[in-house]
Image (cartoon, rainbow, N blue to C red; front, side, top):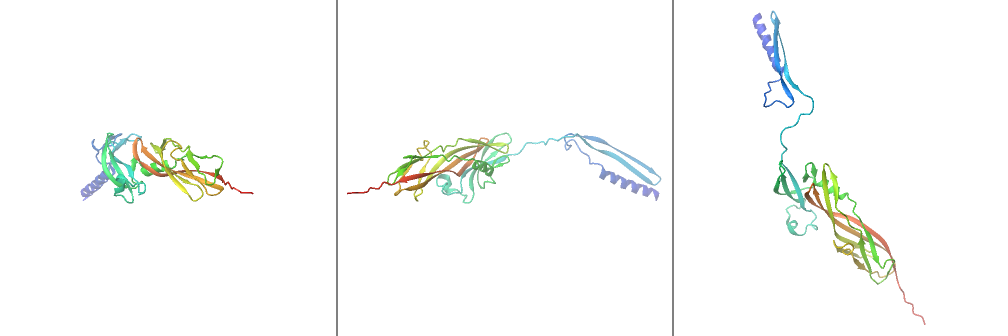
Length: 275
């Protein structure tokens, strides 16, 4: 049965060659940067032992192979309504179906550069995509790091007040120009405006004036003290910022704050009757 043994060993060797050599690669599935090499095989043997040898495979050039095919579409979101019901009291925000997340308009962007509206979603800031690789949370966080000006409190009378007579207060210099911020490979543009000024006069009285207006005018308030003393006067400026990423609107950043304070002396006139 020597012939049978030779055939068996030849079949075994052929199977081994099938495992060792790479499968046939046609032109449709060949990798870019690679060329097919011809296969060679030799069968040699002595008496009842056969030896099968072969070679072949792909020869690839070094370097990075490009990935073919266009990128797919992606979505961006414009945040319209905050979860803060005080800030979202009117308009579409009063009836938003998102009690614990943000109401956002969705836009789909296609590989050819075109885009179109794609409805709305209730979404968190971490889920909302502002651009490729950038979330709304990253955009909002960058804007919140901007150091907003507190301004300087101006008072009339300037040096001291008199008990039971009104003094006038206004804020100067609380103006923030637009800023451009780098977030990843994109540019965040933010425009700021004042919503209101919250005054405290150190005597338990507080006043709120709404902005914006002409610098110093919208912040103007007046108050009087009943007795002399040194009073801590503070004003908290409430800001809002409109954010966009690479020219696309992202949403409104609420509850931005800056502060200014000063100490104001108040004198008291006493009348003494003699005679």
